[in-house]
Structures are given as structure tokens and as C-alpha cells.
Amino acid sequence: MRTQISQHTFRRLLALPQPLRLRTFSILNRPPPNYPGHVPLTLVERGALALGSAFGSLRNPHRHDLIAALGEATAKPYFISRLRKAMLANPTGRRILHDKPRITSQTMSLEKLRQLPENTVGRAYAAWLDREGVTPDTRDQVRYIDDPEEAYAMQRYRETHDFTHAITGLPVIIEGELAVKAFEFANTLLPMTALSLVAVVRLKAAERKRFFETYLLWAVGNGLKAEEVVNVYWEEELETDIEVLRARLGIEIPPDLRETRKLLRDKEKAERAARDAKDRLGAVMGV
Amino acid sequence: MAALLPRATKRLRLSPSTDSVCHGCRRAFASSIRHGQQQQPAPSQHVSQSDKTTHFGFKTVAEELKASRVRTVFSSVAANYDTMNDLMSLGIHRLWKDHFVRSLNPGIRLTSATTSSPQSATGQTILDIAGGTGDIALRMLDHATTINRDNATSVIISDINPEMLAEGRKRFATSPYYSTTTTSPNRRVSFLEANAEDLSAIESNSIDLYTVAFGIRNFTHKQVALQEAFRVLKPGGVFACLEFTPRLSNPIMNGIYKRWSFGAIPLIGQVVAADRESYQYLVESIERFPSQAEFAGMIEDAGFIVPGKERGDGGDLEGGWEDLSLGIAAIHKGVKPA
Image 1 (cartoon, each protein chain N blue to C red):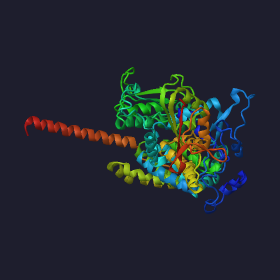
Image 2 (image 1 turned 180 degrees about the vertical axis):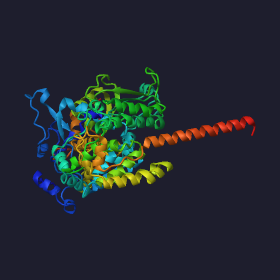
Image 3 (image 1 turned 120 degrees about the vertical axis):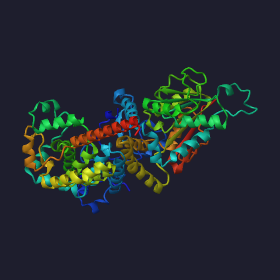
């Protein structure tokens, strides 16, 4: 039952189309990893991972590792290859694939970004990170995608997700994340982004109404119209004026979600205070 | 603490022949040379201490590092330990542990013969090694108290890992056995953070029953742990070990079992506990454990009498253990000669 297959053969087998690849390796006969951290999964394992991580991340949206795993499990056969080809078709995307830059708190110095002029991309990014209270370090490593370049494309998408947040101004609360995911689906076509939209069931009624009326339309329209955001070499665009970048990409900002929610909350509080005062007055007056 | 395992850079190695077991675990049977050994070099007297390596799952690590890496693995699995056990074994681990405890029958039942014995007043002293979360210890105390009506038997829970012991304290906090005073003489459970290879905190010849359930495969030097067990047990004391076996005897069931182990278990670890690597280590460490015959031989070498054994034709021990669930787990027992 155990046959020793050479590395070379395994690599060629992994490059075969899906129906043929099914029969090539099993759980007990895994090929060697293609890059550090690579775990080659069989089709059954990938399906089980997709299902488990889908339900797990719906139950607990704070499990970002499950959302990452869902993305990797559902990216093949077509979608991550399409993304990589979209990067190859663009000169900047080709440079990114060649250089393979990584975004971590080491490579992105927040102190320097905060020093940049007011309306630059870097300053907006740093300001957004501070406003939301997150750092660039929370992204998991890609493990379940076989081709190293496609794995890098997925890693790049994951690490630039925060930049998408920064140039659209959307916050990290569920509403904001869903809007960004909808935008990313229209822009990158990764299935995980569409699957995450199932989380609208977790929104409150008012939030859902706002999402469907405003943000979904904004997201899909802008995502389709805009250039591929994965092709932006963010490390070189840090000092660009943010309006110039938005115009170049073709992105309009949606209404500021935190402001909208704050206004609504303040209005509700004022209304409730007025109602309470009226009730108390009524009680005193004996009405 | 789990950050000590650089997850992204851990390489998965293609597993070598599943028949290879580390030299330290191998018995000096002539017949054992049939297994090809390709992992570790044979330990020789000229090799210095720092060059000695051992297995950590399918990886090779320096011996002195294995204990700390095991500790790291169990720090990261401690919080979800019981949930993950239920999912990985589909709840069957509860049956194994219940059977293990019942077959040992801890506690002294008062009959006309035992009423006057001095030990019925102090009860048995049980040492549960690698028993961090306390599931065996709790079963022992329940059995002794409820079935044998023995309110004096006590358990010392020992583990190398403080997070696992913390889980054990949590479990016992809601039980009738946990005493809040540290020096109460009626304390029925106590916790000891120690490496099983060095139980110097426990006196020799002081323990009636030494149990280790699903822990010994993680020890760096199993023979040393067995010798420590021999030292702390009273003459006539019982050594009992519940552990997974490296393979099942039925090849079809073994095929299914191995695919579940290497496919489903790390996946469940990823989805439930966000930790694929620790569960990959767990299934690899099962693969590296010696077979039932080899392990029974190691127990004999430590000086124990292994009940029920016979020497078969190939020179192997047969019958000196009890297989559970078609051989997925096995109970090994030994008695220290009086």
C-alpha cells in the first residue's frame, strides 16, 4: 500500500486538474510541503474543513482563523488561480508577485506612518488602525493552498484587507466587515467573501435594513467598477494622496458607519430621555 | 505559550515507515531487529548528552527539549481538552476510563477480614500521573467512596503542566473531595506539579496504586518513569497504564483508524481548538509508541510482575495486557513484588 513517490512526481501530480488529482495522494501518503507551513489536504479533508470552518465562524465570528481556513478551503479550483492571473496581467501585480512583500507590524512602522501628512494613504491607514484598535499582526499564515504563488496571492489578499478598510473608512464591527466582504467579493471573486455574507443573519433588524439599502449596493457597485485592489502596491502608495488613489482605483467612500450609528444612538437616547421626563411629569401631575 | 511553536514554519515531514519506533523504547528482543530503524542513530557511550535526540511525533528533537515541547502542546490543549477528547474518540474515551477504574477497584471495602487492618483507617494512597485534568482521579475517588464506601482513600494528581493542573483544580472545586485547607489530614485530593521521571517529592514505598492514563507516550524516558513508578510503589502495589497502541491488529480496521487519526483529528483540532499542530503531534506520538508486547516487556524490565503474560513462540510477551476497542487502547498492569 505504501509507495515511495518522488518529490518531483508529487509536484507534477499536484498540478494536475482536480478529477485526476483525486486519486494521487491520501491522508497517509501526503506529499512533502511546497513551502514552510504547507499542509496538503485531500478533497474530503478540504470539504470537511470548509464545512467545519463555515459553521464554526458563523457561531463565533471572532474566530478569524476559521474565516481564513474557509477562504483557503474554498479558493480552489478556479478562484485563487483567477486572482493570481489577474495579478500577473497587471504590471504592478507582477511586481508584487515577484517581490512578495509582507505586511506585519515589523514591515509597517506605525510611528512613521503617523508622521505622514494628513491626507496620505499611510496616515489614513495608521489613523484607521488606531481608531479601531487593531494592529497589522493578526493575520494567519496560509497553509492549505498547494501552489506557492497562489498561496502568496491569498496571503497578500489577507494582509491588504486592512488597507481596504482604511481607504473605504469602514469599521471592524460586523456591519463594516460585511460591507468590506461584499466589496471584496465583487472585486476579487473569492468564495469565502460571498460565504461570509451569510453572517447578515447575525445583524439586528435596523442594521440589516441599513446594509441592504445602502452598503450592499455601494459595495457591489464599487467592487465591480474599481480596479483590482490586490494589485495595489501599498508599500509604495503610502505617501500618495488618498483622494488621488481613490480616483485612480475608482472607489467612492460609503457613508461613515460609525458616525451614522452614533447619530442614531444619540437620537434614540434623546427620545428616550424625553419620554422618561414626560412619564415622570405625568406621574407627578397624577395624570 | 503556544506562540513558542512557530506554526507557520513547522515542516510536515513525510512519515517514514510506521514500523519505526525510537531506540529508547525498543526492547532488547532478538526478534525486534526485524524493524528497520531509520530515525535515530543508535545511542552509544561516546555520544555526549547534548547530542542525544528523541522523537517528538515524527520530528526529531534534542532530548532535553522534548519535555518543554510537550508542556507547550498541553498548555495549548488544556482549555479544550475534554471537548476535544469527546470529539476525537466520539465519547468512547469515557467508556475506556470507566472500565479502567472499575477493573482496578480502588478503595478498601470493609469486610470482616479488613475491618481490623490498619490501612482501612488511612485508606489507599493513589498516585495519578499525567492526570492533570483529573478525570481518572475523580473516577477513582467516586468509585472508592460510593462503591467501596471508603472515605479515606486519597489521590495525588501529578502533572508536568500547570495549565492542565489548573483544569483539574477547576473540576475538583465542585466535587465533595476538595478541601480548601492545604494541610488538612483528611484531604482526599492533592495536586503535584512534577515530571514523572523525577518524583523525588514522593517517598519510596508509599503509594498503593500508580496510574497513568494517556500520558506515558509523551514522556521522554519511559523506562526512567517506569523505574520511578517502581520506587514509589509499596511492595504489592499496582502499576496501571491506559494508553493508545501504535496500530490495530486487524488491517482493515487499522486502515480506517489511521485515516481518522491523521485526517479527522488534526482537522477537528483546527476547527474546535484553533490548533492543528498540537493534534498532529498527538497522533504522531501514538504512532511512535511501542507495541503492547514491547511495552509489557519494558514494564517487566522495571521489576514489575506482569499478570497474565505468557511467552509466545517468537519470544514476545502475549496476554500481559488488555486490549480495548479492537486494540485502539490497551491497559497494562504490573505488580511490585512483595
